[in-house]
Image (cartoon, rainbow, N blue to C red):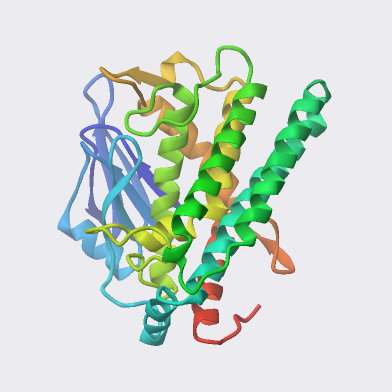
Length: 334
C-alpha cells in the first residue's frame, strides 16, 4: 500500500505502532486515519504536509520509503536507509560501463524499448480508430525508422553519439505526442510537451505522473544496488539522478497510457486543474484522480513479463535487479 498525502496541513505521526494521518475537514473537524506500518510500502508527501520523527523511525524500521514531492509531482527528497541494497561490485561495474561501450548498449536497449512501446501504443490506437488509419500508419512507419537509427549507433562510449541519440529520441517523442494529441477528443488537445509549468491539463497530468514514476525508479535502483547518480547518457550534473533518467525510458509508457486513458475517457475536467500565472497545475482533486488510476495500473493489473504474470511495479524492480546482475555477469533468478 502506498500512501499519497497531498492535503495541505496534513500531519503524519505514530500511534499504537501505526501511522496516524491527521487533518481537518471543511468544518474544521479533526479527521484521523490509521495504517499498519507492515502494510505500507511508501509514504509520498507533497509540500504543505508534515510528519514526525517517530513516523520516520517507524518507516525506516519497516523499510517504508518516504518521498517528498513538489506540487507538480517531482520528487525533491527522500528518507531511505543508508544500505547499498546489494554488493558494491554492481556500482563498480556500473561506473566502468559508463566509460565504455557497455553503457552504450544499455542506452540503445532502453531507448529502443521506449520507442517500441510508443509504436505499439500507436498501433493499438489504430485498432480502435479506423478513421485515422492512414495518419497512424504513417506515424508508425516514421517511428520504426527512427528506432532502426537508434539501434544502428556504434561507438566506444555513449558520449561520442549522445547528441545523435538525443536528437533521434527527441524526434520520436515529437511524432509520438503529435499522434496522441491528434486522436484526443476536442477540448482535450495540447500543443506539444511542456514541463515547468505545464501549459495545458494534459501536460500537467503527465508531468505529475512522470514525477511519481521517477521516485519509483529511484527506489528500484537503490534496492538493486545501483547508484542512481551514475548515468550512461544523461549528464552527471550536480545532484542529478542521471541513472534514474536513463533507466526510466522504457517505463514512461506506463504514465503515458494512464494519462491518455483519463483524457480520452473524458474523466478530466476543470475542477482538477488550477490556473497559474504562467501555466496550469494539478490541484488536490486532480492529484487524487491521477494517483488512484496510476496505482491501480501499476499494482493491480498484471501483465506477462519474463515468462510470468507481474504487476508493472514488480516489473520495474525485476528489471532493476536484472540490470545490476547483468553488469556483474550474473543471471537473475525467475
